[in-house]
Length: 267
Length: 260
Image (cartoon, rainbow over all chains, first blue to last red; front, side, top):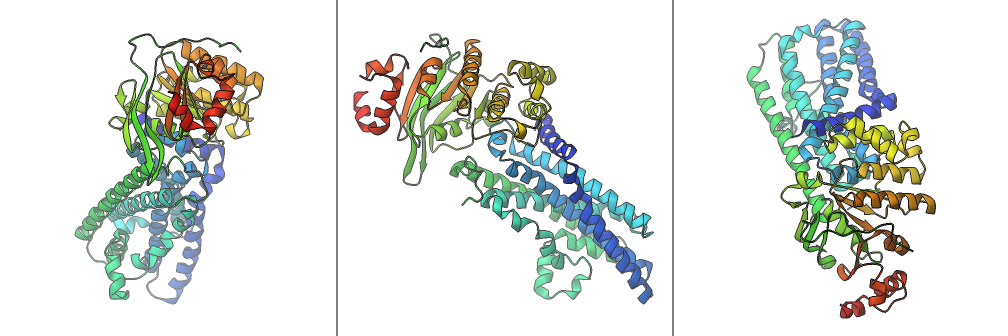
């Protein structure tokens, strides 16, 4: 892997954001709105029950972590869409750039925008609503890592789907986090779900994160084994998503799809 | 019309592009049917043919954007199928249908593409190319705001950024006024005359082809029907001009094949 080529992909995204700062707004705006909205909801709920700060920390923590995952996923797909929107795939893939270098560049871009989103959310949650995520202790780091990896994997998978189905299919990609959220048990225990949904949930690393988060808030020990399992699952899913992207790219090169990739939709 | 200048690869010089038995099939449809040709150092080879002849399919295969069904492509001796990155590092292209991202400035586009090609001393190389292609005043203008002629010059500057040994130009002057097109042809001829690399050029402008190309390949229905010097080829085949020969070959490719 040539770092200079990876840097070229990141630099292009940096140029785009610097030229048009509105591109950065989605990186934090929706997450910030969610934090403010849920911050007031939890503040209200706290007045109705004795759970108080623990309830606020649980709900707002869940909102923050889920938004972080969503930003990472959309960070990867949006960086990929920039090349689709600019009809740049011909120029890009006629260079010595390897797929691994391209995908690494997309992921690094996503990490940068995801970090901005996380910083804004943490600032709002602590500054405005007075919450401290130190309650989670060091567990907060593996929580973030699992969600980051899952977001990366899903972002790569979604990009491969758009590469295969054409630019119009990007509309299928935006709602993916919302579709997954009931299964990931973001706001309620896994045991609430019917059995078939629990089966699906066990394939989703975020479900382990949110179960672990609730366990810590309930005073239970840090679920190291469960998180290690979630981490392994997330790594496997990143590798599977990358293999799928490579497969779709090779298929596009064989079928001529890549060379024709400028139409509104392709089949 | 006289040639701007012509040279051919010296005898025994290794070709910058060697295409052998190249084919592309889509099910029962054959787009390219077992073609073979070379491009030598310092040589400009014109790839001619009617729409749908297989020119762009051939170029896409050489660019690594389309996998051949059969055959091999070697760029500067490097097998494209086996060593994709190394082979593509030695080539570059400009095409009227592949404009650079319009939301980046000329300098930004040259910089990030230069990084993709790992161009050494990139800053200086960019400044040299901006001057060579008369783009200094547009350096900080977004490419999407440039005229089509200016965008073509930017595309060509990108295409020579890595000093490629193989330069592929797909109708590079299609959107240019006659004066700009002439300047550009001279510029491209100059690049070839430096002798380091060769150029594969497609065009529907036969006068341009006669002026610039050392050799032409006539492609129809995915096959090479004729090959030779564009200045002598028409007379060898009983045509008044390259235009007339092109029209005859486009309309009666099977008859032309019998003449080979």
